[in-house]
Image 1 (cartoon, rainbow, N blue to C red):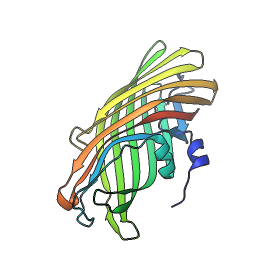
Image 2 (spheres, rainbow, N blue to C red; image 1 turned 90 degrees about the vertical axis):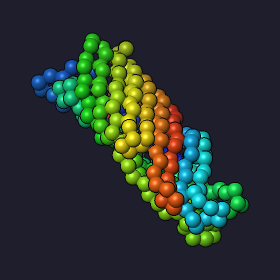
Image 3 (tube, rainbow, N blue to C red; image 1 turned 45 degrees about the vertical axis):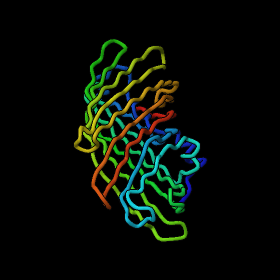
Length: 262
């Protein structure tokens, strides 16, 4: 795998979110019914805290293989083998809108299990979010209802040190979610954005929730800069025996981004 570390990762002024910031504060006119936002690169300085477990009868020591995934950002950065993050949003007449967000991470690490077996773990994580928006405007405040689906694809791979791959399982599921977003233009060129949602409801994850807060500075007509914090918590469990899979973790960290508007 290519290591896309340093320059692309740092410069992919990282996640998640320009994800929340798609908005234009000026009221739309009949000549300007559509508003568009594109964050082709944004940096999410993620930390992961929780547990992941997979069922396997091929690793000495039994099944399932369970590993805490308490990984601070410094370790995530060292383990990063690939990343792709993009966010797009559009709003019609400052009323109805659509957002699309895609996040891809490829991580690799090594550890020794309780039986002293050296293992190499690879984890590919893809999050894809499609949601509708309905906006109510009150003076300098915008309130958005957010409703849609968030898809997950986790592809863990476990290889014995100097040996064969013993786990090669991918898990895919989709969570419906409902939430809201508040946008406040509190000063010229400055805005704050807060978003929260809850999902899963046992239809995909047992439960998932997300919180994010951002400050946006727009010194240029067609570009703004973002900084904030985002947390996504997922509780998912399925299968039994060799088919068992569990991911119960919180992904959280600071956000920096560039958002293009037109």
